[in-house]
Amino acid sequence: MSTTLIYGLTALGVLAIIVLSVVIHRQVRQAQARKAEQARREAAAVAALEERHQYLQESIRLVAGAILHDDKMTLTEGCIRLKVLLENYRPQLLQQEAYAVITEVHDKTSHIPIKDEWQALPKKLKRSYQQEMQALEQEYETAVHGIARELSSGTPLQ
Image 1 (tube, rainbow, N blue to C red):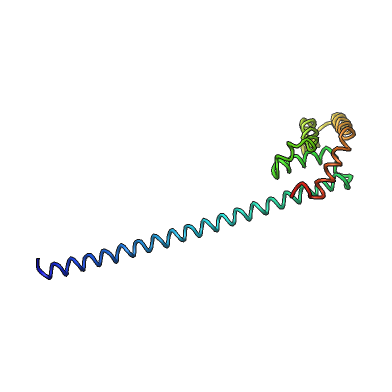
Image 2 (cartoon, helix red, strand yellow):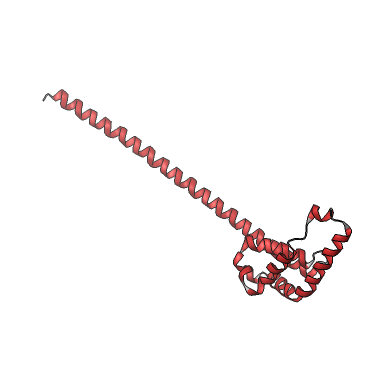
């Protein structure tokens, strides 16, 4: 073999090594960039989840406090709101016997229209529903107030 051929093949080998090194370096940088982007997205998702968690916690405390101290918030409305909030915050709380009253009041009033549908009801039907809600509220007042005190303190939300 001639020396020119040997030098040519050596140069070609060195060139191939350089090209492959550059390709590998780029791929490593891209992989690192993807990892960094994934970590950033995960951190953003965790932050959003934590923010939502805090929002739900505060909303539960506010609704529970309103049940206790705001005459505009009926026990029925409070139970409906708490059921939805607790289902989104920590559904296993609703499985506990102490919190079953929230689900019970919610379920017993789920047939009653709300918002615009309520406004569209005839007065006679509204009175009928109001009497039904008052009977439920009298029956469950003690239990709901106990739960509302507990939830407004924030203890079960920790």
